[in-house]
Amino acid sequence: AQKITQTQPGMFVQEKEAVTLDCTYDTSDPSYGLFWYKQPSSGEMIFLIYQGSYDQQNATEGRYSLNFQKARKSANLVISASQLGDSAMYFCAMRGNSNTGNQFYFGTGTSLTVIP
Amino acid sequence: GAVVSQHPSRVICKSGTSVKIECRSLDFQATTMFWYRQFPKQSLMLMATSNEGSKATYEQGVEKDKFLINHASLTLSTLTVTSAHPEDSSFYICSASLRNQPQHFGDGTRLSIL
Image 1 (tube, rainbow over the protein chains, first blue to last red):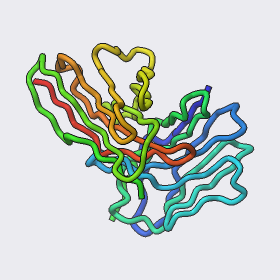
Image 2 (image 1 turned 90 degrees about the vertical axis):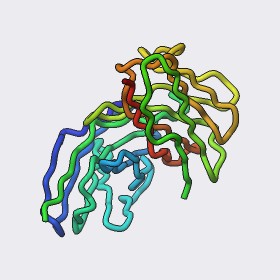
Image 3 (image 1 turned 30 degrees about the horizontal axis):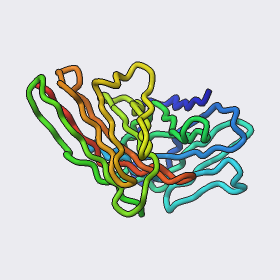
């Protein structure tokens, strides 16, 4: 069974500093996708970054990068140069395979607060 | 990028009312849409997977007769909360995706049953 674990319920970071949000996963599928979403207080889910299990390089999208360590089954999100607008809930997710209807499995989330 | 529209964004109604929530993929055809429920400060809980032209697949513990899902076209799925009660108050959010692509979410619907 697929499982996503986020062990940090809350994180604080000083504005302009970098922060790492942890995510570990468990799957027996050889092919899978890992995603990070941001959910501000308004509720919408905003896609941030994607990492495929066969991707050789770590994914990067602007200030977001994904530290993918396949052997450790971890996919940590790194946010560089934090901004006040980064304060939100962050969810790590894994996409299942076609046998599971390509559904997503979400972690419990990390609440990030950026301090001025 | 892909856009998913969810309507309404907020509903306040009396107990016993049925509420319909629409989820539309605006610029792509989504063969699969997902419906989630989220309680305050918790993660998204998958309720059901909606496939165009077929019956929805419900997760264990989700009442099919309570939460009716219809996926009439490749761009529209609806969730109807039948005879809603205060315990059904929650944040409901839909998503749509193409195979091997990220799920794109609607903005969610805050349902409050008085």
